[in-house]
Amino acid sequence: MKKVDLLKELRRIAQRKGLMLELRRKGAKHEVWRLGSTTLTIPRHREISRFTAEGLIKDAEKEKPCR
Image 1: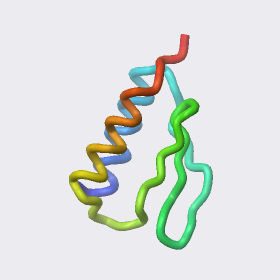
Image 2 (image 1 turned 90 degrees about the vertical axis):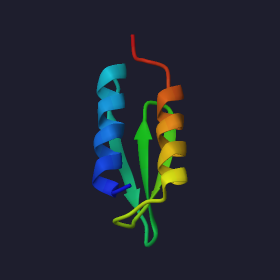
Image 3 (image 1 turned 30 degrees about the vertical axis):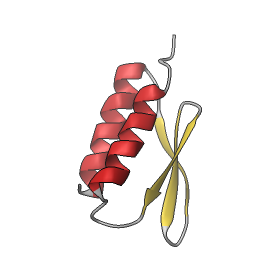
C-alpha cells in the first residue's frame, strides 16, 4: 500500500471518530503519529507492506471515539 493512501485512510478513521491524526516526530526510518491516545509508528517508505498497513488500520480502528 502506498504511504499516502494509508495516511488518507487513517485520516478518514480519525474524522469518523472525531479525533485528530497528528505527526509527533520524524526519525530516520519511521514517523510517529498520534490518533487520540494511540501511537502509530509508520515506516518512512513510499510503499508499506500490506501486513503493516493492515495492522496500523486495525490499531486505529480500536481507538475509542471522542464524545
